[in-house]
Image: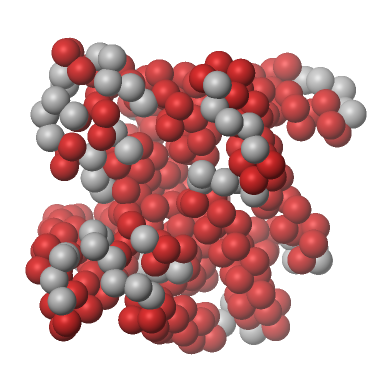
Amino acid sequence: MKENLNKHHLYSLDFLKFMAALMITNSHFQPVYEDVSTSLATFGVHGNALFFFVAGYLLMMGFDKHQGQNVVDWYKARIRRLWPSVFLWAIVAAAIWNVALTIPRLVLMDGYWFLQAIAVAYLFFYILAKPIKRIGGGNKQQLQYVFVLSLVGSVAFFFLMPIAEGSPFHTNFHYVCHFSIMVMGGLFYLQRDKLVCNGLWKDALAMIVSFVAYFVILKIGKGQCGIRYYSQVLALVPLHLFVYYFYKMCSYSWCQRAFQTPVFGRIIAIIAALTLEIYVVQFSIITNQFNQLFPLNILIVFVLIAFAAYLLKVLTSLFLAILSKEHLVWKEIVKV
């Protein structure tokens, strides 16, 4: 029974990763929508939030599996998942599209704020959450204090940062505001067996209301002055609630059934497994060359991105296998 429960939680997380990949990619589709309306290129903040939530959940889960691992080895394992893909794609992009090959791009993941942010968040999460897992045995109340502290930190940063002309969530604020959502993911892992679901349609409605409320708050304050501008910080509330209710929605049986369908389930699983690579390659692949086929161009460009992401994943697996000097197992290298 416990094994089935854990598997159900993983289905939920994979669906969140699937949606995160779609939302983040769509937010960068300005060239794809330029003949219709570039305002359709949105939802990136919500996609980022879903990914940070999943990251926090999985990090807390990992503390159970690697209890004796020191911070250096632990962090190397996390960066080993992020950096090689960026490094290799920088070389590929330079060779094919003549993108400048710079040291910051190769070493510091320059141009990928999301990966830089999550790399730093990993460290903070380890420092703040690992002791709770090790000493407190996974005390929910202690991690709640970390959650509140991180949320207060986001609010403080918002009031101290320069006033943004557009959405503050598209400024350096995005380096800070998602950490509390990562901590929330850790909290959900600690309480994974105690999630209360009040009905799919109730949770779906709450998710939609939260989603809309985020944009309403930003609409009220965007480009304004004084209290109306600073009221945009309240958008953190519906953003967190969106993630909360979205995860609850994925905890119902429909999600597991979706993964068990032969075609759609496989598509979800593949996209979820390629989330990182999809983010890395998309800036080079997104094009307006198929705009005359709208709305089919949306699907065409995303399929091209997914295919390039798969090739990058294979290349990264091969690169790491060669560095490890282990015997090459091609079945493992080419699998998603």
